[in-house]
Length: 591
Image (cartoon, rainbow, N blue to C red; front, side, top):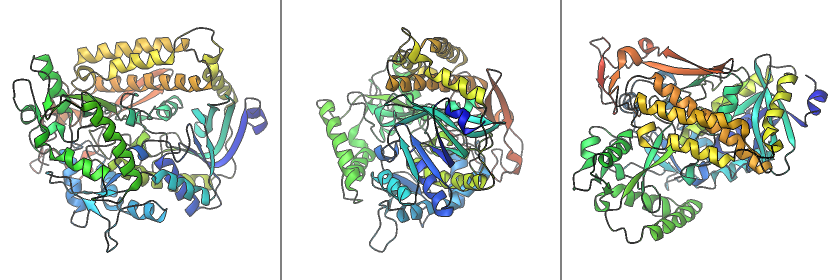
């Protein structure tokens, strides 16, 4: 289709590479392309403001990396046995283990402040009380602003306050995207030779620190025909203070019920590098059996004390932006928590972190011309295995993977764009239909409010009994709630362009929740983060499989794809051979 024809639908912009999302992954991708291929035109489109968007600048500011004392081979073995539980793409995990440390050098070269020792080496800490083969480096929370400046200096173009909604396609390949201005409502169509999806994960808008993950890119990729993988791993929780809803780091290891019993010891045995699903399951079952509330003994929890020192002071790292952010946050938390004493009540704080867009080792999706990096494809890349990613049970892996995957995807996207002589066209009928669907809520005089749809989905996703302590009966009940919300989507009503963006986010949330429950119902075992009451054991004989889903003829189609475990070096059944079953939920198996 010609530019003139698309111009009848709205404003048309053209670039060699379109980057959808202006957080840390999108900015890292843009910088990488411009450094390697300065002649390529790169356009970053962001719904908010690039450099201030995404989760990176509102987190811990830590990067998990392999310290000089850590062996990559031990990291791989630990990860497969205790974190991903043999559901990893072990080949991509190996590439990550041996190359992820370069991220620190790249960030430093781009102007991001990474903490150093006086001798110039990276300043790092080890997680207290945990014997794990990695450490944590510190980075300041103005990192994305610095990355935006670096990208702009290299000639990257930016378009802020534009919500992209759907992908343009040409003969089964990505050709750009369509969306609208959230301030003025104008329709925008961006044509490109390659598209990099860097729009973040689905977090279901529950806890504020993670609420910017709205799943728009996940939904767009699915609607365009791209495959999803590991969608059932999207129910991450943190244990939070009942009063402030702020995370109590380490609470999962020091939980006690109303009669003084050590809940953590009962539900969390063995090697535990970080919070696991059993913390939420323990909380739920103790309440269900009449032994609530669950409290944490603060005097035992050195991890929380250490976290406050690490994040909100300059005793470990000199990070002015991070210190200011975390000091304000914890001051507000202390005010809300005043009077709760040394054994505060804790609750599971639902985060989500669903990141299922399937990619290969070059971060290419199954839709030619579309690449996906950062949180949008973290679980979909499969290198983290049976765990919501981020954080993948490794705090600090989210930032590391965002930059690591962005560089891989950017290099591949640049090669793809350079290999095309001209811009691909676009299916004009599909583009016109997309615009009609996108703007439909603005044309309704009455209808459903987006907030009501969001709350309906949250009611189906956030309860532990549905999304973390799973059973077929309860999951079908939750899926029914999601499908009821889905049936209401054609009646969404938008008041203005800002509200129109919220309508699209609500529709994306419904789709992601449906993916989660359909994939969860398919996996009939417990493995890693995935825990089923009705299938409590890990079934290596039947479920060393990735669950893959895609849209076909308006239906969500699922398939269980065998993991190529025979060619991987680490196998759950060990040297003796033979597949079998093991107790699920913790991944405590020898390989």
